[in-house]
Picture 1 (cartoon, one colour):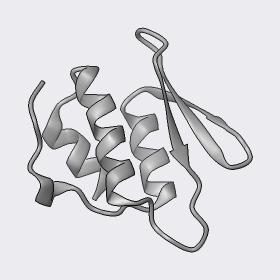
Picture 2 (cartoon, rainbow, N blue to C red; picture 1 turned 90 degrees about the horizontal axis):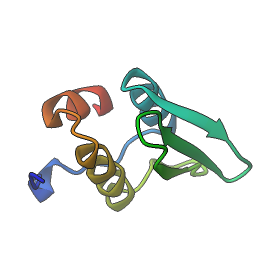
Picture 3 (cartoon, rainbow, N blue to C red; picture 1 turned 180 degrees about the vertical axis):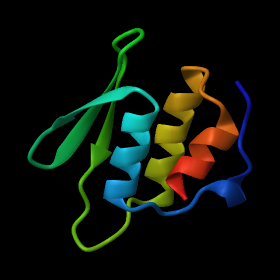
Picture 4 (tube, rainbow, N blue to C red; picture 1 turned 45 degrees about the horizontal axis):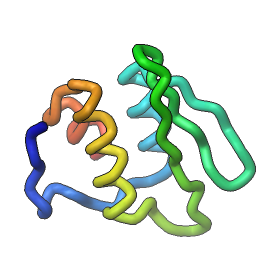
Length: 83
């Protein structure tokens, strides 16, 4: 797995994250405090927190990007969708 540079991690708006995951083919199920992203290829899951008045933290964005890189999505495509 290819490692991203730390300076490429950035805070991200919740709506932007959900839209990007849907464009990448990840199914989204909404919950009260989190959304659940489910990979259609193998059923693996990741959670997306629903922050109040703030962006999703860079550490959480890093975790979600790592989840996507494990599924062999292109790094540049992921970054472009999240910006």
